[in-house]
Image 1: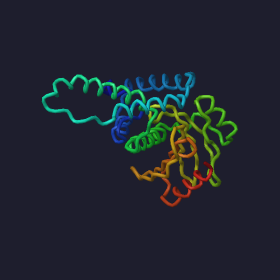
Image 2 (image 1 turned 30 degrees about the vertical axis):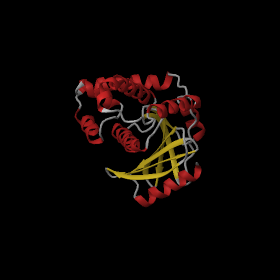
Image 3 (image 1 turned 135 degrees about the vertical axis):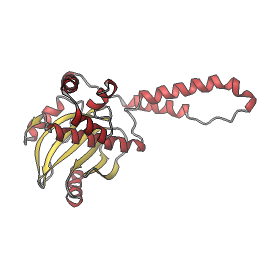
Image 4 (image 1 turned 90 degrees about the horizontal axis):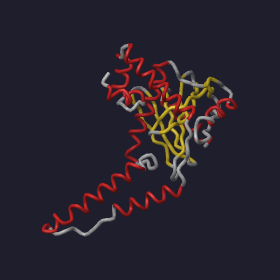
Length: 245
């Protein structure tokens, strides 16, 4: 495996087809390297401290963004050489601000990327046979386990008609997220959750590679659901989960 692909592969950042192909074709040496990185990720996940950014930081960053993108009058052609250094400096400053707050803001165009990361995480867990890090049907066991490894307290109660199998911590959108693993109508379904700022958002539905996906935001929590349920049963499960928000 190209060393440049190793971290992207372990983090599930590749396109799903490439991710699954590498998962299938890795040799013993490459698998050992992958396992070392995954072990490091587990150590960080279980022992690192996470701190939520204060609301004041988001407000400050948004103010900087508004200031940087404020339109300015068009410059005459003869002044272009004089204005160019200022333009470069402003563009560089804006790029730095955007890079520093990528994890704070979720533009609509990122929905497809997040959807792909969730699907890759789900496929990777199924192929590895490691759906859960804590196996329990008791939410009094699962919730403290997740809360001890995350900087937020995720929802863990399964809706009526679903069985809680356990949970794990995974990485989506560059941050640790809670993954609740359910059995519903004989199928595995995974409910992802992590905190976000901003207003509630309605459900976005998608189908990829035989899987159903749904994403929404409620009460400061971004939620994604993925399963191979049929569309009718999947929609019913989405409704039941949203009723718990």
